[in-house]
Amino acid sequence: MNEIEPGDAGVLFVGGSRKVSRLHPLVRDLLDAAIDAGETVVVGDANGADKAVQAFFADKHYANVIVFHSGDRWRNRLAPWETRAVASGERGFRFYTAKDRAMAHEATRGLMIWDGESKGTLLNAVRLLGAGKAATIFRSPDKAIVELSDHDDWRRFSRDLPAELVETVESEYDLETKNDAGTRQASLF
Image 1 (cartoon, rainbow, N blue to C red):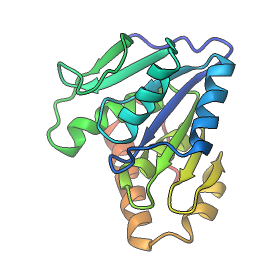
Image 2 (cartoon, rainbow, N blue to C red):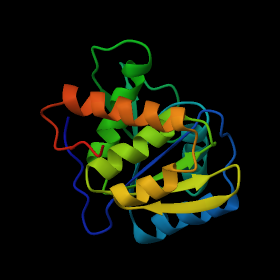
Image 3 (cartoon, rainbow, N blue to C red):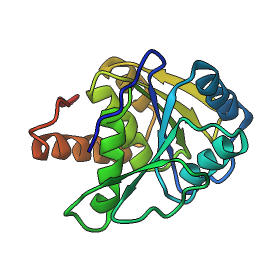
Image 4 (cartoon, helix red, strand yellow):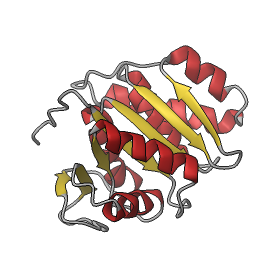
């Protein structure tokens, strides 16, 4: 896979829960700022937040978007954007998370639209942090924006979350970092 050349503007990984189908005005403002900055946007092909984000950029006729997908064909691509197929020998959940790992690797920062429940969305934020990249989380339940830039920020953010959720996310991340010995990500925990 060819790596994205971020240029001066950077590469924004936008992800979120499949339960999120509409973008809050605060999220729209953050996406407008990415357009204004000329950032390359990497987004997945799933229903939910991925599709809503794609619809936003399609409506804005923003061309600087790359859709990542697992397998041979994308599920959603709402404009004639470049696509990136991410090969994975995995099945089930891990089949689809391969593209998330690739987007976190390519990005210079991330915006995660979190429904208050999705482990995968939080895992993407942790992947970014583990690679030394900032993650902005929009918490849909209380309409709050949280900026995370390091392990300490994650600790402050996660201390009010259910312990089981945090443990699951951190364990999955640690498992990935052990299995992906060739990546530059380091364990946060």
